[in-house]
Structure formats: structure tokens, C-alpha cells
Length: 311
Image 1: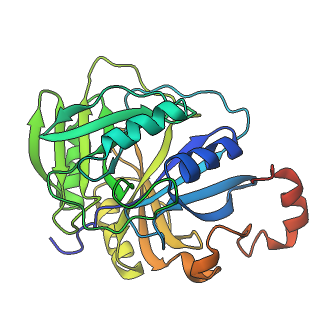
Image 2: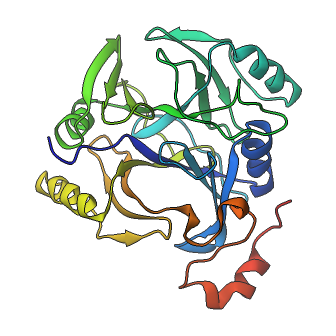
């Protein structure tokens, strides 16, 4: 298949308290705070980006922190777990760190031959640290508190919980070029070989489970990576020909996007590599300014007055 998807690009979730969200991901987990901007569709709300040094596709976790939003509920039609790749031997460090910072977690377990450590962020978003079968070649962002030998490399996988996995699986395999590689009971693992990491989507089929509620502590959408705008529009044509309702081209400042809801109910995005996070800040200053897209720049003073300070 031509124009196969290049794994995960980013994942966007919903938080409540902006400062608490920043403290957890930048300080406790040690991710780089890549970008402080606003929700383009709701500019009175921040949009935070966390990832590696330059915001490589497959490392980018973003948040809309809506103050006082109600808590969501995990269920079907949702992305319910985000897996981060970490080096072998790092769990002792993370267990100690989670205890020090009062992070809720469960004991390590094993799935598909890989050790994983599940935990929750302050809003209840479920994450996992996973030691992959093959060592992850990506260079992590590091801090004084989180050194390279234990640091998060980027996404390992994302898990979608569905009433039926059939329609979603068809999108992954027939439109995106993924392959079913493993199955255990009701969990199906789909992998692309186009990239060495951030290449896995797990589908969990639970016919009797209630539909999830997307709110605080929930994933808003899952974005898949395409190389450039030409590829973006070719994939758009394939999706539209399948009868799925897909948006027009959208400029998200740091990438160009299309959105559609896959048959299982999860909102998917297709996002380009271009233009990247250096389009409005130099590398050394990523995350240090409040960046607004051109359409909102004339309202900067009003927008800043609405946003809580982040320190």
C-alpha cells in the first residue's frame, strides 16, 4: 500500500488545572514543555504540548486544560490508555518517584511479553510505562531529576476500547497499512513497520461495556502521522471513499490536519510533519513564550487576561 501511515503523531487529552498538568508532565515525568499556546477553537483555554527536544512525531502529548471541567469516564468509543516506552531496569526509579509525588499506580505486570507499569495522572488519565521487546532508539529529553537511563522515550502504543473492534481494525489495516500481530483474549495488537517506535495500536473489545464520557482525564483524539500535505490529501481521499466523514484541510500552526471519527467512535486526526515546532520559536526557547496563531494575535491582551499564570 502506498502512503502508509507513519505511526502515531500526537495524542491530545483533557485536563482541568493547567498548573497541575504542567507540573506533572514537565516536572514529575520529565517531558519537555514544547509549546504554550491556546486552543485555536477556544482561545480562552491553553493548549500545552509535551514531548522530546524538538517535538518529534510519536513523542507529542498535548492537553486542553479546561478549568473546572467535570471528570470523564473510561468506556467504549475511547482511547483509554497511553503507553510510553522506557528502558529496561527503570521501574524501580519510577516506583520510588511515584511514591514521592503521590502518583496512583498499580504493580508492574506483563502483556505480549513486555513489562508495563500502569499509573494515573492527576486528572485520572490512564498511562503506562512499557519496556518494549526491542530497545527504543529514540533519544529522550532529560532533566536533573529524570536522567537518560530512565527517561520516557515517547509513545509505545495507544489503546482503544471498543464495543466491536471490526470497523476500527478495517481502518487500521485497509486504510493505514497496519497489521494484526498478536491477540490475547479481547486485546488485539496492530503494528506498522513504517517506523521503529510509536507504531502500535491496541484494540480492546468489550461488547457489554458502557460508552465512555470524554471530559477531564480523557483522551480527546489520537493523531496519526503523515509525511507531508500531499500525502495528507491522498489519505483523505481514501478515507472519504470509505464513506467516513472527514474534515477539510486545517492549519494547526505546527502541523496540518484532517479529522474523522472512525467506526468505533474514536476521533482520529491525520497530522503532517511540517512545518514543525520551530516555526515560531527557536529550539532553545521552546515552551517559554505564549504563542498565539495569527488569527488570535490581535486579541492577545484579552486572551492573556483570561489565562491562569503558569510558573
